[in-house]
View 1: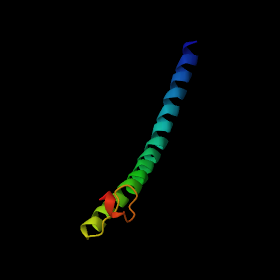
View 2 (view 1 turned 90 degrees about the vertical axis):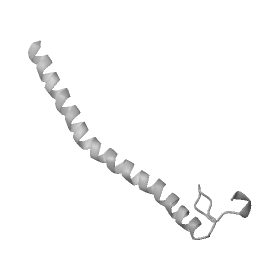
View 3 (view 1 turned 60 degrees about the vertical axis):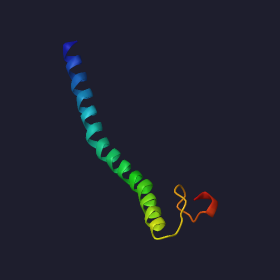
View 4 (view 1 turned 180 degrees about the horizontal axis):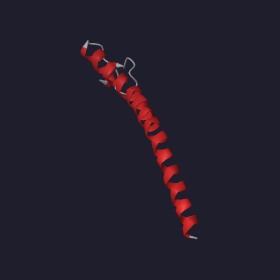
Length: 68
């Protein structure tokens, strides 16, 4: 039985290591893409607002005057 436990330990350890090695870059890239998708329109709307065009914060579209 100890050999079986050792084999299982190695298998589990390797699979976890493989999952970590594969998953972490994927997770980082996905979060990076999502953060760009979320942050970029907000920055763009800030810049457009500073240019004097009133833009609604959430949608990034031109807002009716009563929203601002």
